[in-house]
Amino acid sequence: MHTSTRLALAFIASIAAGSAMAQAPAPAAGAAPGGPPPAPPRARGPALALAVEAAQTAVATCTANGYKTTATVVDSAGVPVVILSGDGAPERTQAVGLSKTTTTIKYKVPSGEIADRVKTDATLDAEVKADPKIGTARRGALPIKVGGEIIGALSVSGAPGGDKDEVCVQAGLEKIASRLK
Image (cartoon, rainbow, N blue to C red; front, side, top):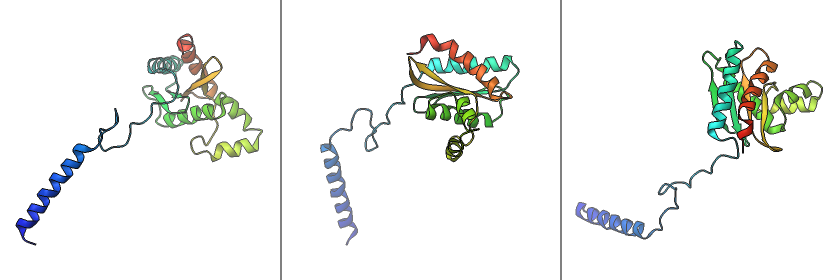
């Protein structure tokens, strides 16, 4: 084929493609042209401002007690809304905090209750250890509730013991409890 013929065919193909695109329906609202549809919003959980306030209160409480901690707030599906690491908090406290909130969301009870139960329930212990998002049951996360419904969880990690983490979590929850919806 001659160069001029190839150029003519390429030109005709580009015009045909442009014409076909002009006739295609417009993408759905919020969707990127030619891309996947937009992702759904996160699950029910505390509003961002309240999640931040609870995490800040929890970290501040632990800081006042001499502990360098991380606070994690997740929604009802266990998706992080806020991860707030205090100055000097060890890096691993972020992963440990997520494992605590995962425990609370999965079992719908404070993570400390599961930490206590695995000591006497070998089946539950094996289940917790087999879950890559948990691994070890630890005290330090409490559910965030509206009425009787769990809409998320708040954890603290980094204090020398889950009982001390829970004191900070409780302070964070008490700060926002009356404004949760």
